[in-house]
Length: 109
Length: 115
Picture 1: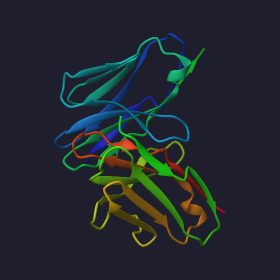
Picture 2: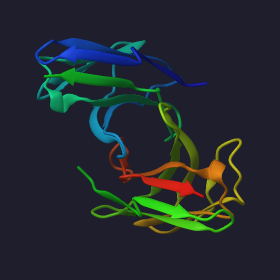
Picture 3: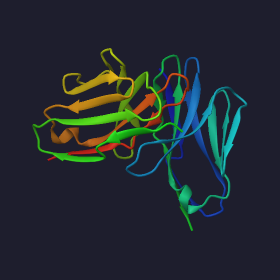
Picture 4: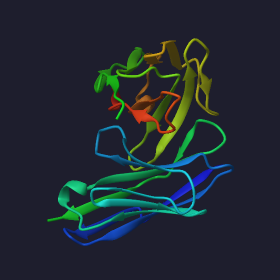
């Protein structure tokens, strides 16, 4: 059974304080690992897709990396507007996405 | 990115009534749509998968007679919560695949409150 575990559950940072979020996964036949951002009361917003170990993608202050067992979402010099819940999901043999519980990030000014 | 529109964003209904939630893909044809339910501080739980023109596939533990899913066209799927009860109160989210891209795009979600 595909599984995704995200850590930490919650993270508080000061503005400008860089950090990383972790997503550990087990999946049979990884078709893709996805990162989404979710604001309160909203649907998830797509950020990145990673397909194979060693792959990296960047968008503004965010950088996602992938190994065979985990993915990291690095946040460089975060701003208050980066505050949100970040969700990781994997897609295995079927089209279904399996989500982790997310990391709630709060960036204080 | 692709746009998925979900309506309504919030709905309050009386216990025993039915509620319909619509999910539309605005700029692409969605071969597959998914319906999720999300409880506070919990992850998205997949309820069912629907493909255009065929019956939905429900996840284990989801009552198909209570949560009716219709995927009548490549741009529209609906979820009807029948005979709603307070325990059905939750955040419902749809997502859609175009088939050409691996990532799913999500609607804005619907907050259902049953009173």
